[in-house]
Amino acid sequence: MRVNEHPILNFTKGKKVKFYYNGQQLEGYEGETIAAALHANGVRVMRESIRLHRPRGLFCNIGNCSSCLMIVNGKPNVRVCVEKLQEGMVVETQRGKGELK
Amino acid sequence: MRHTEICIVGGGPAGLTAALRAAALGAAVLLIDRNDYLGGQLIKQTHRFFGSKQQRASERGINIARELAYAVQEEEKITVLTEATALGYYKDGVVLVEQNEKIIKIKPKKLIVATGGAEKTLLFPNNDLPGVYGAGAVQTLVNVYGVKPGKRVLMVGAGNIGVIVSYQLLQAGVEVAGIVEAAPRIGAYWVHASKVVRAGVPIYTSHTIKRAWGESEVEGATIVQLDENWQPIEGTEKDFDVDVICLSVGLSPLTELLWQAGCKMEFVPELGGRVPVRNENLETSVPGIYVAGDVSGIEEASAAMMEGALAGLNAARALGYNAPDLLQRKAEILKELEGLRSGPVGEKIRTGLAKVTC
Image 1 (cartoon, rainbow over the protein chains, first blue to last red):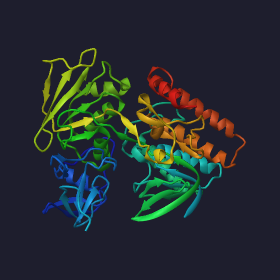
Image 2: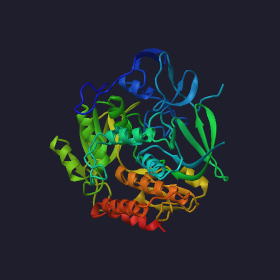
Image 3: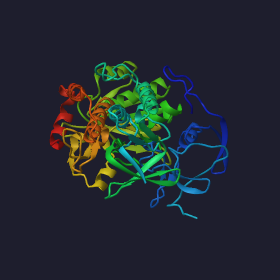
Image 4: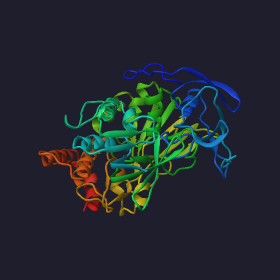
């Protein structure tokens, strides 16, 4: 869900890009964060909590809290609230602590 | 190893102002920020600021951020490293920084820590569901990226941030179902609060959130009235059909670097948690380490800029830089700060500061 009209702000968007969320192709804009692009597509669940497997989403949105860790291009524990979206990115829900390969 | 006279960690209102003031006296400054832009949380603040003209009253935060960032980038004495995260402070005075997955060691003569604060959460069942956000998080999403968090919001906390973000959600076309405030009074400035009330948003004072509802995301919330001892009154529950819950219940200072450096810390609830003991010059118990802005106690951006100015001048002064009107500059800033913290609104801050300023 994007803001279409605003009394104060003009949102300048970057190039439209395609990316993948759990295998599903979505669209977003270069320069915005992965979390913003996911929210614009109605996706708010980012990972599962480690012990109780509860859904977790965005909380602080500025890189402090680590609530939004996801697997991006195979790399776990990426804070999607500060990581910028790029063409073709593969974004997946993170379950568990993630592994370094 | 990079040597510099002053290293500043954090490019928000405090850090940027500190850099400008120190550089104006002639000091070489290295400013680092973990984001790919400067301005910190000012970049999402679309409302007009209060205070005097010197405190940039009636300017919007987003424009202040732009001006300060531009001035810093134009200043020859300041080197800026963005996307650079301070990882640690070492005994030998080295600040370890990561930039583009590479490690940089910085050895400054003086260090100004202006790392800001982090939003607090609140305890209630289902407070971890996606759809429960910090109010500042939603402000970033809406005002920086132009993306809505959901359709209908319950705001928890009627301080300035809660009320201002509620209004900004309305501006972005998001419905605000109500604002709950545990205290018997609205904490925000009346000019902000009356704007949301005029827009038809109810503010429930002496109420708190009891629980959130939902399976994989927020689907609703229940609020409850509190008695004079802040205890829930049974039978006063109200249900809200909301998909977003915003928590605007305060911030805590981001003090990790100060702990590592061994700065003496005190728990001061009025300032948001554990904060560094500092002297009048904003120097901590570790000589050469200064603080400015929310890291030294949660206030707002105007105070952060004033503190940044002071820390910048004092750090440069300690390095031997001077100006004929230096004492006058300092006196002016101190007077501004005193004005900002005056009256009943500033009482909490004054009480808090009295506990940690030596």
